[in-house]
Length: 311
Image (cartoon, rainbow, N blue to C red):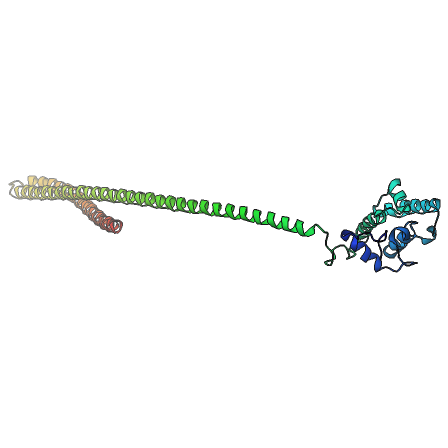
């Protein structure tokens, strides 16, 4: 397709528009795009190709006069272009009717975008790898240079962060070592305190054992004294009985016998009481011995616990 003026240099940024139009079948061939599209009929056909229900071609007849062209464009603008979000000013419509350079191309750019947004998909012509703007290579070089500069800045930031991370790791190790040292000191103090507590318990147990031994000795002494008193009382009774037997008077003998029987009865009761007391003392002695054994067993347990703590 030729551009709007013979010999005019083709604008590379608009090549996708020309390629796009070349794929469409229109009512008459495209020779000069500015003149061919000046009455609005071909643009109506382009839009109908994608949005058939939106365009009625009977409203856009071929025109050669300015008034008829203005009518077509005003109708197309009101009924179609506004619906695909394309707006035209009176000046833009007049430039298209007067076939000014690139006027129709700029409108077709807007229509291309409007059709894509309306149908919700790309028409596939705008990013053609075969065509680049004249300044695109310089822009790419500039962009690449900026990217390299940004990459170098990022590398410096990463290196700085790695150094800070190494410092933090070192500080963490020092902190963990300090915690370990403090934990070791606390454990040692706790062990010493436990050993001292066990030694105090052992001393208390030894003292208790000594007290129990003294109590047992006292009880044994009391029992011994009670036995001696009981023997002495028994001897006294025997002597009294002997004296009564040697009496000369039968009545006195009888009285003495009755008296002796009563005394013997009392002595027997006393003896029974003494024997009961003796049994109680023996039972208390057994309890003391059992308590002594428990104290010795507790002492052995404390010594074993002390050995465990020392280990």
